[in-house]
Image (cartoon, rainbow, N blue to C red; front, top):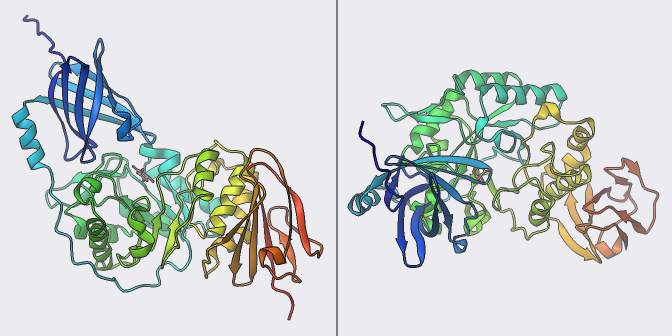
Amino acid sequence: MSSQVIPGVDGHWIVRGIMPVISRLRLSRTDEGHVGSMDMWGTTVAVRTEETLRGVVITPDPSSGFGFVISGELEHNVLRLAFTNVGVDFRLTADRSSAEETRKHQDREPRPLPVPPLRDLPPDELVRRPPMGWNSWYGLRLTVDDLSVRRAADDLVRTGLSDAGYTYVTIDDGWQATRDSQGAMVPNRRFPDMVALGEHLHARGLKFGIYSSPGPATCADYAGSFGHEAQDARTYASWGVDFLKYDWCSAAALYPSETGMRGAYQRMGEALREAGRPIVFSLCQYGLFDVARWGRQAGGHLWRTGYDVEDTWASIAAIGFGDHADRGDGWNDLDMLQIGLGGLTLVEYRTQMSMWALLSAPLILSCDVGALTAEELEVLFNRDVIAIDQDPGGAAPVRRRLGAAEVWTKRLRDGVAVGILNPGDDPVEVEFTWSEIHVEDGGIIRDLWDRRVLSPSPTWSGTVDPHGCVLLHVAPPPE
Ligand code: GLA
């Protein structure tokens, strides 16, 4: 038996797959130590490397903004890469190559599709209110399968949440396998029959949502819709899909401009309209290029305003208390409700629900619906809070700072919603007069979380818990 000398990790590596998250690596040893570069999401990132017993540890330069570390294990001439980014475990395989092959590989990478002339797709009435429902991502990530989606759907019905409005059931990333010989997208083994799954949802009065990307690969490295937009839209329609979340991901490498991005979304927006079934179009491009300004024109109904929310107070606070662009002719999607995922207190989850309602954001759960506690269900069921979210005017709240607290007022069809929020870590005493916050009193004032009617008074005063929110409904004064 001949023994093989395992060469070091220096050299050029090509990662398998069409445009995976990382496509190429160049590693070398110089006087300054082990350095290199990697092509990732279409940008080249400098890396530091450290050889280990079994391979290499690769650390992207901090200036790249990528905070993860990649471990590479060498097996003969194959480098197996593993890293975790935004909760997704990536496993990639790279083959040793030469500088020449690496250059050719780069030349073979998908080229952007021509940008269609930008136009204004005629508005439709498909989404009159911020969508409500459930999405698989935070609870299940890449373990999502047919059974877990059916279970979520059944739990929405059994708990009564579907009657309260939570009707969209969306399979996020991770359902795709590959394309068949005709180019049609085939689901992976975890989804044996999409038509039957759609029927299961529809039979329960629910809507069927699915996920893709304008790029060749999704954020978790599954196949995207690049170059197959019209075909994919028709496939979704044939499965009975009602909602598409379209996530930017690898498209960033192909269309690095506003026009390119708008064109890529418009291409799918047009395809959905021609697919023969009304499909809600949910743009997920993290709020780039002031999406609310043009999202509707591209056929979108709602659009994410930023990067992924996390189940931490810091994340909820950063999104909720951040700046919010005007919603345009659609709905600002602040990302999903974290309730039921376990990282926050009930007070904090209630605050997220309050802020999302005041900001007219989609209310999308992502937890195990069947495991929600009675208290959590009570938060989600609060019909008065839902009504604030679903108010047809979708008016942006006016926000006022009041010492350590913030008072938000949102004009509703039937009065005003007032949120008294405490972003801080200590309880705060708050007091204001109705005229100070430009709210006309005289009508019935209800505390929506405490579920009580307040006695008439020209002022409101009370203590707001740390990270808490008091939510009031002020009815118009009687005629
Ligand atoms: C991005 C999106 C998430 C989720 C994942 C799936 O991070 O913002 O909402 O869809 O991709 O890979």
